[in-house]
Image (cartoon, helix red, strand yellow):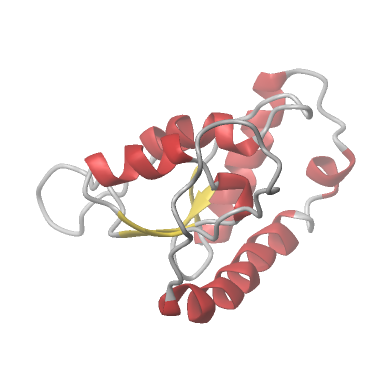
Length: 144
């Protein structure tokens, strides 16, 4: 799920429980459509992406850079004995330290608001279509 700064859902993709978030990142980003207040096409690209360590991959960072989207995603800890070519030294980002707690708090807010829906939390829905409809309905009511 992707959301805006106040924590309102913008787009989501329903997958199986054993699917990693990083494999669905581009699909979630392509679902985003924010209508403009006046005339014009909907906004398709966010100005900035805040992510957690689950979104930390070279492919995601490259995808964001190619589209000109600024991002703040913490890097995963890499074991020293990992095979392959030596990696570049890590970049330390001052905005990352400031934005990471705020991003975690916002993410928790969205999840807590979705957990108010018992059907979503307990996963009563048996099919992907009914689960997607339930999450869409909850998302729409979060915008109201």
